Image (cartoon, rainbow, N blue to C red; front, side, top):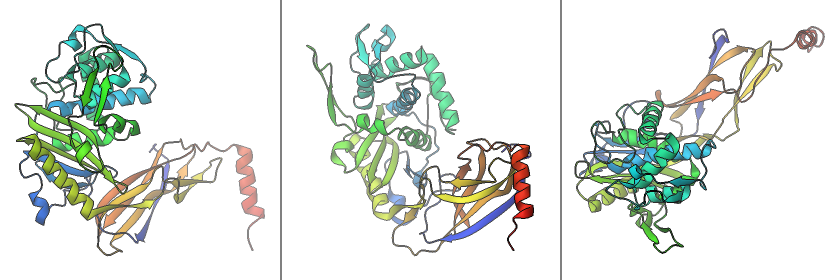
Length: 396
């Protein structure tokens, strides 16, 4: 908030007829007790979160720095989707595979040097076949070089608050100083899922590349949960001899989207079984309940010397909390922390205050409130009319 804009501060506390939820990922530790402690028993590290609110439902050594293997490609896909969203890249753009991209070992779609493939097909190759060559081809298209793209990856990681992460390549092949954590992987997975189109790739079980050529390439998703677990539609598997079997998975049912991450599993069967059990637990125990719908007015703030006398504070998106099923209402309260008055001008997108949601006095979640429109400083004529109105048209 700009200096001088805060004239006074008022807070409003309202009891809401909601249900208690677990602690937010941003406010304290996870809710883990009883049967929950048995989740992901064979994983070195694990985390389970609600994608909408970021609430941590379960964690196990979630900040331990470990090799992420091909789960690295979640960030590669994120930067690709971001470039598409910003208009810097199109799904129909052709990408020419370099010698460097074509030289990648491990999982690949067998790009030939000089071969052209669309961004759309390369995304299929990354999401479904875990193509190391496809990842590098996209990285070079977006960043110019893989090294420049890796710099972008680390900058994005810092922006997302991924404190346990450093990338040294774009595909997760073994290399020094390349690590992440289950929690950080959940953060970038949550960000990737903000792009609705990504699950078209991560959620498909099979497809083809080079379909109408002499060498069609059959793609089968390395993440078998997208076929065998109801609601699963991503995100990324990983394996190296150092990292063991890893998975960043997502599934959605009844409006609740979950993200589960396991690192260091002994084999694919155990990995898939333990992630399925994490999903089963959360879907059976939790639900998502909205506090405010997108566009709903939360409150109003007076604007001193503005063209508009007041500014409405509306929810920019649906505000929800994760709640435990079967508990009694009345434990959730909220506090609207906004200034009593703002001094004009107020810029659109300017942070005005926040809505804090509590469970039994403990912070559960916070929602930043921004100005939905610009309020310019009023001219002398507007101020004169407003003053005159107060002087001569006072209610009796």
